[in-house]
Length: 141
Image (cartoon, rainbow, N blue to C red; front, side, top):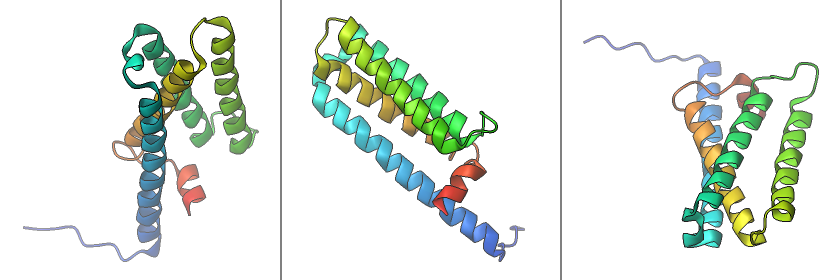
């Protein structure tokens, strides 16, 4: 049986090490945020309102990460895009607390669950299914 020869190219080993670091750090960060949200919200997160909030934060997080890592806003530094996206999510969450008559703790827990799930799902797709974007590998470097 023929196996492909192992690559001795240092760029390949550096890229593989950076990919492992990205998967580990992003995965653990996402899981940590998710666990904090679940511990804070508990069984209250099973209602339609918290699940909707979590879903909106999940989508917002995935879109934000995609915009940052795929240079979707040409001419603007990725760090500026990331900061704007996080501020947008924060303003959205704060406005929900003001507009909707629900507890701050429930909205925060649902937001944390959505944010953490978004990080984990995004990194699973762009890390396990498809390759980690080059811009993220360079930052892990």
